[in-house]
Image (cartoon, rainbow, N blue to C red; front, side, top):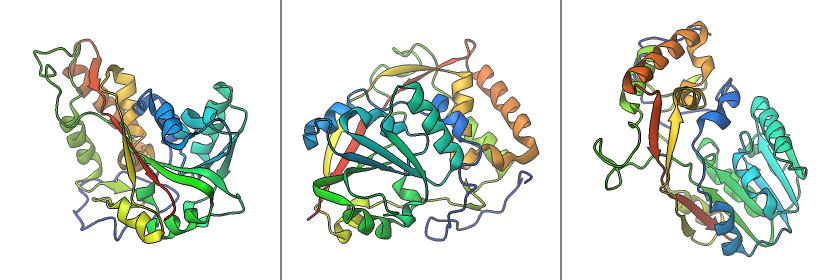
Length: 294
């Protein structure tokens, strides 16, 4: 598939978008290096809120390379990750083996295919994945997949703070410059057009209102837990390139035979933005939402 240049802007909201298998094609190998880390206290916060003690089963829906499942694995007897992308599942298996996680199973399927004979679970997790699914259908399904006392959780994707903390201005405490995200987005648009690409189509918006969706499916209102972070971490040019290729809107397949040229232009842009080739990121707190059956 050749890159599309000058794509005409479409309405392209999430309401019209349809999933296809190319959504994250080629992105899996960049995910672990490119994505920002979750807050260190995430597993401890979940264990406190739900009284987890190493028993029970965890299901991670839309698990990708197992980022959330691997972080939470010590809290459960068994872990199951479900994702439709075979490259993501291969990465999940590789990374869990490297971490010595021997009680995890990785299943290729879409969330809409659940329960898929997987049984019942104490916790069912969505980590930055629920917005890609038929949310009402999946919410109704996972309600019936919980054991008594079980819960569904959603972990917001870690990211940069939208507003700098005090001292985070260019003269402040950060060791290196912030990544030039506006310029990076402009470069992506030069290659792929003004719309946000998502698989074979475009998706310029994403849904919100998850709590309404889960309550309509039969859950109590969400319990929200803030997991503090705020760390400054340092990112290299290689990591920022990997971050872009790990995203659905700039996954490698979208650039076709111009992937190498886009990467070269991106590396040049980043080198011009930091003489050291290093960038600082101030991490957001993580937001953990917990739903239990009404």
